[in-house]
Picture (cartoon, rainbow, N blue to C red):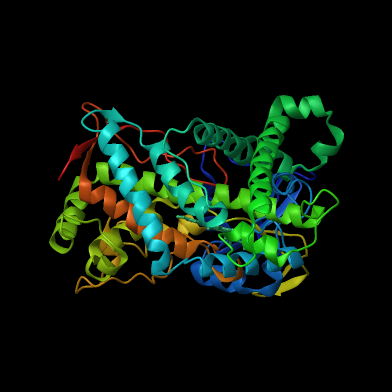
Length: 471
Ligand code: HEM
């Protein structure tokens, strides 16, 4: 296997306590090189810390599995459902279905633009009414607008900002993400604990029950939506992803509901879309708000660029994009600097593989250092700052296809919602920037901080800003 640190027999090493995962990986990579092994608990990880190696590894057909982590199994309700946490036949069938549906509903095309623009217009209207000239947290408004886009494609449903049902889902989701990415990681790397520890002890330390309760709640929500759709389905006029699924899977159980297998797949996809489709894009937008407050010069330049191209009488649209290269470059640099998914989602090897001269056994966890690449000092001019020029050539032209840039991962499991996320980021970000100047509250010093103990997502810590009306 690749060289590395194996720690103690049986227990391996413990995850770092004082360093973020990326910083820990950086230290190991200095010692062992760009491909190395590390052992946490009972799990062996092979880590790729170089862009070309990552590209090669994530294109390898036998590196497309997911490890049988407790958290992954929990998110699949201990079955095999959805896309993000499955592999094999379910993964490829569900991934193909979802991609086909999202594309036919306009992902990456202008058809979807109207719906996103409508949400962007409602968002800026709401911010104007509630957040002007005083310190305010924008999280709920941004989250709701982003969820509405994916939820309309999936279930023809949207929520008003502040709707008590959606607010409760967001609160539950925050807790769920916190449990999964911090405490539950111990069960992922010490799977034996789930068999030997009594359930009440597991619940004391890891809140497994709470996580299960939230997942059940999300499953009930998706079941309600599916039942409503079954009752109003018009085969000649499918409205959304749920309708298309119901038409493609005509088998029903004795109560008229989907068969258990089909229901599991659709519930899995809906819960993933609700989580992966909203938390990622809205957190990136929150990063943008935070970073532009910290870098007012970049904010002012992006606004000047917008004002030159887009009349103040209308919101920016995708057709403006080619002329808004600085704004586009700013958004790419936000994706780079925030490195929302710092080590991508962990892959697993599905057979014994010889890779770069090393033996990598079946069942090895494969981890890539996306954040290290995106902050590589020898590649980026100002790796720890917001600097849109990273993505502009000497003539000010956008160069978005950079090496060492992989916010949506790479290869066969590359983010399924990338084109949707890019459309949403552009339309929401430009709407906010056109309407508001974003400032730090008086006396507050905002910093680009994330919780160092997170293992999956670099979420920005909660912050307040003051919005001033520009037009
Ligand atoms: C800024 C926004 C987003 C970022 C940074 C992001 C990033 C990622 C990353 C790093 C992965 C892991 C890929 C891998 O395992 O190698 C991923 C997977 C995935 N993303 Fe996204 N994502 C974003 C938005 C979205 C949206 C809007 C959707 C929904 C439409 C979505 C759906 C998914 C799904 C279903 C997967 C699993 C793909 C698979 O396992 O085959 N993501 N995303």
